[in-house]
Image 1 (tube, rainbow over the protein chains, first blue to last red):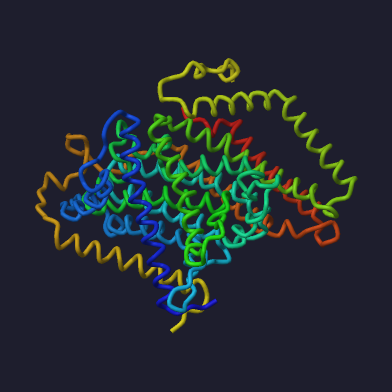
Image 2 (image 1 turned 45 degrees about the vertical axis):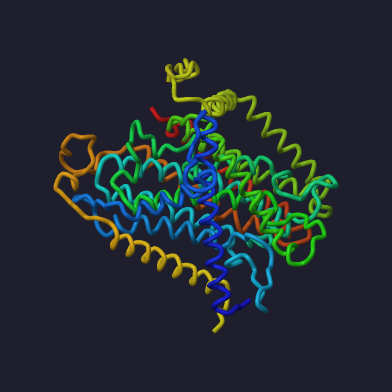
Length: 406
Length: 127
């Protein structure tokens, strides 16, 4: 598919504007909602309900002095925020924010690029964002940014694996990495008539892993370890000031919007939704409306999490990622494949089905019977129950007698 | 002028982002004050003078996690092409669907064993 340069440019510009606007809504909404949760008023002076506060704050950044400490390593110090912002911007390229709109004789597909590698592109841009965080921490040559950078990058790469494994089961269902194919695969009816064919329903465990992973990936509370100001001051961007600091903030908030948009695309049918038989010009915009509503729902979830949950401790964060989410993601990808085989007629002979079931039973019994399996289950239970708890020491932290003996 | 292929549009977006960033930074340079002083340019250290290099020692566990990350990320990359074609396989194709499933089971079981080993060795614990 080829399109004129101006169409491509306009689509890219519109997508960028869309995500920038949603980011502004996120920042404003967060301040309003969290203020309400803490019995405060929140911003209410600039514009209706303080809605223009974000814009004014952004403008203020332009007039702030940009202090570049003498010890920093140039040019990496300067380039790091650019990498973060551009990586965030580029990951929006594969997200469809609506259907097709005809304007001035040209058909606009509201997706910058429907790449063959699709979701892989999104994951890759997430990985490049890690470079921005780590290099910013390293190039500051200052203790707090260095520790914050290492911490954040270890957190981001850990949860990136969990996210990637969760996405694998989506690929099995959709049979493609291409985002438009994944959205199309969810357009039919679901397991029950009347339910949408969204992957969130049959792939619920993968959906759950992805949602937890996206909160950690965006570095948001309760997983905002990078900004544990009591221990790390500001994390990797301690030495940044002025607009460069603003760029890091933009990249971070944009990550929330992008992750929300991606979970909607992968698990909630993306821009699909009923058009209620509306006339043509309105019906063409309806997909964008649906997409925005679904994305705002997840953004609201992010805000609620921030208002409700205290920050986790780092060891619990890593335990949740490595001991729960990654094994669950792996096993669920295989379980999905096995389910697809069992469901398909001609996919598997009766003997093979029985063999598969017997194998599953043997594995389950072995896992439960061995003492190791029992201990692991206990560890997992502890990881789950403590991951969402405040940082105060819990009673479950008493040393296990077996551990002490070892 | 038309852009062939999807990556052309992505290239437009890269240029778009970089140019926008450059414009913003240029505007910022014109508008911001610049009053450096030796104290202001020193490394942040909670009010005390910074001693020595800013690069401190890190916990060795980060290193181990980086290794584990490489193993599991590469594994995910192996998993993706398999996941994409898996739906097309049946008992009559070569390889058959069951063969593909068992092969992936063995591959993942090996890696899970690695994770279990690291777990057992206490690598995943933070003291």
